[in-house]
Length: 104
Ligand code: FES
Image: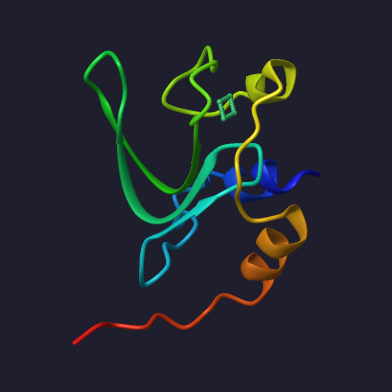
């Protein structure tokens, strides 16, 4: 599994139990040669005006996705290149989330 997919995967409970909890802070990580990986209590507005509340999302930053605002991996075919966190760094962050630093 690549880091963008690991950052974006989610599940929805069908048995009425609570869905995946959100983190205490919202983080945005630019993925090397890929999307922006967001984690937190997100509200994503779709092109049709509807909104969706999500605990995480991978948002396109290459402009090639056919499912905007989400990444659909079209950046791979487009050869998109941009600096960002490596897959190993992203997987490490998911396994060991950093404690937030709150500016005064
Ligand atoms: S960044 Fe993945 S499709 Fe644009």
